[in-house]
Image (tube, rainbow over all chains, first blue to last red; front, side, top):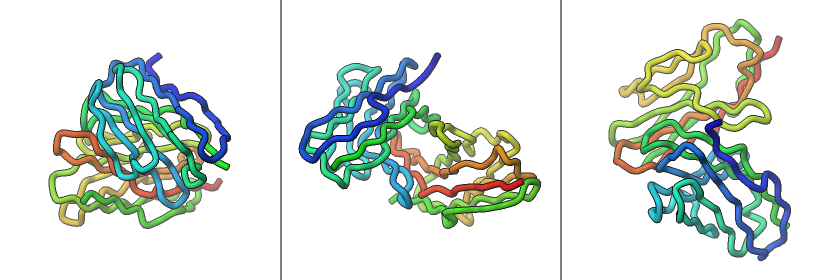
Length: 112
Length: 110
């Protein structure tokens, strides 16, 4: 089944404790993105990747890192999480630019 | 800069009533526009995109470049249409930067 998976689905952590949210797609898509969804603000793009080893900042990249060492994986790294990063995070992938995005199920992160 | 505006946070209608979810955009080039939907406890999924010119689940959306709008319409709402709807815009600049609106929650009551 073609899909985008994210792990973990739920995470509660404390300020400053490094964490990684994984994202994987099995559709051989070139493009992958990370978004955060906050009430009243909709979805905002954090980072995106056009292909392996090619990444760029979205609208709200501060406090986040990404890597794209393999085509299928696009992990989101929070080196030192803070409470304002408490949010619902979505990973998405698509074949190429302007194409339909396929979203993961979301990761609900709480930073205490 | 790309911007998408969805002025209504909540739209509440009765079953069988017409629905129009508003979306206005700001973009200097030629945009690609999408509507994504998120049903309760499900992931976001594409509902339709303007380039396809198709009707999905009875919904249609027409790109009006003069008014810079891409409103989503359905003549007769169903209870199963209750969901969060996001309008999104992508530029045609060759790299992927998708900008979402803040979303409109549609509630269809029996």
